[in-house]
Image (cartoon, rainbow over all chains, first blue to last red; front, side):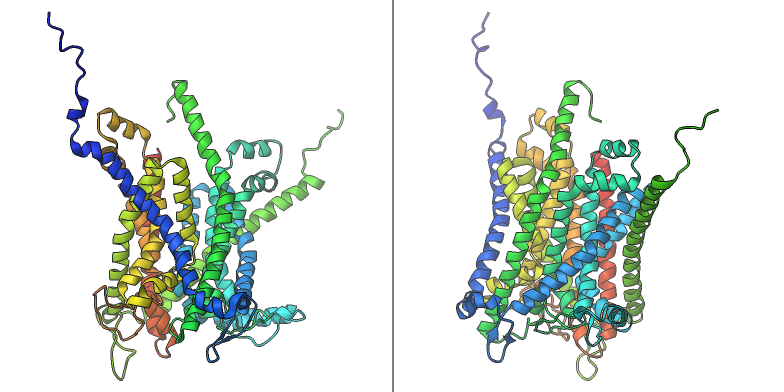
Length: 338
Length: 292
């Protein structure tokens, strides 16, 4: 009996073609380069904005942040009134949008009859996909007249003793911008919050209801606390969106430098100022000042977004990890997960 | 018979709790109705103003020149949008899919986390900041071009496509991967010929959503591509081109162009809403199919 070939290992290497052997590392390298590109773009954006704003930074330094002049003729630029306008419009929009959006999410997950949930959710999300230039056009030509002729007189007569509701009524201004931003932000917060509510384990809900809680008590005592970090993150994302919106705000806010406490007044924001000055910037200093504004916007959006991601992460990962653990346990028991 | 100790009739505190419950329910219903009616008001008012200015010329002719510049159509803007968004998609789609493959199948958890964070942060950057970035990097030295606009839109689209793709890649059952590997198929062939094809539907709907989003962007294009309302219908991506969104923004600033602004807004809104709604429905169906 010849067994001399039996202990010779079969040559698996030869059965794989060259392309199969180098394919794995090649694919990994290509996809790694793609991912590295995504990270690089982010770094590059920061670098270019710092480089582009250097001229303005040398001229005005950090005083740029505390000066409210924007004078192209004398080459004096400052961001204070724009920062003020940005913060005021975004904060007011969030104050209106957040409760509305959470209420919508609650309605969609807890109250709406099952068949209409998906449809209603899709309609709310559609609001987010209306292009901002269309919303801006609508804001100034349809919402604007309503604000001027109905809303502002009403607010003025009811709350005119406050400095925030005084002054001439107009179609454009801070109030119109706040309303447009609210419309843009509500669907964002609502859709994230809705996802969060659906990930809250049903046992928690059922436990509360079984103890005799009303639906609202279950929401207040179980649902909202369980989803709180996620809701905060959703609100932060909405805030970031409101801060960064350029076109729609530029179309409705009136584009005026200066700090006014009345909501009826014209205003301006960092992003809108950039949009409005696109072709009016003649000097290098003015262009550099606009880039400086963009750099401020970038810093705000980075802070808001990274903060939001850190808030979301624990909520986002835990159910998945639990699901995987559960699947494994079931598989070990010989039960199929389906 | 003795009186029952507990009354089952709702009274006092319980009634108050039920009232609060009902009130909150009504408020939630009101909020949902408000959102839906705002959507209806926007759509109806844009439609009613836009439809009247629509005709075949509006889509097939360029802007009129000379004495009556309000005549003519927006063919040049439609062509520009198609070119700019088309090139952006060609850049963003392969990149987004490759990133998603890396994050979902190949990267270590730490690198995957960094990449995801970079994508989410990029997604959160105001689009006008991306426009200014491309302006300082490309346009300041090479001048305006449709290509610069495409680059800005691609930066906006990559995170959207990558995240959508990653989500569907994770939905592909591991048993499919294992079956392929067990047959002796190498990893990269498994990824490209088993995993990606079964996620293809999801990738395409994610891309459609990103296209709808990019077609509606104005801010990142302001500095990058042409702004003339009388631009001719060029389709060379190295030239500055007009887009629908820029046209609306300019018509809005010019007296006498209001009807055209509404018509263009209506056209754009229809395109964006129909494609994004269609893509979302397809995505939901697809997710159900894969998720089982």
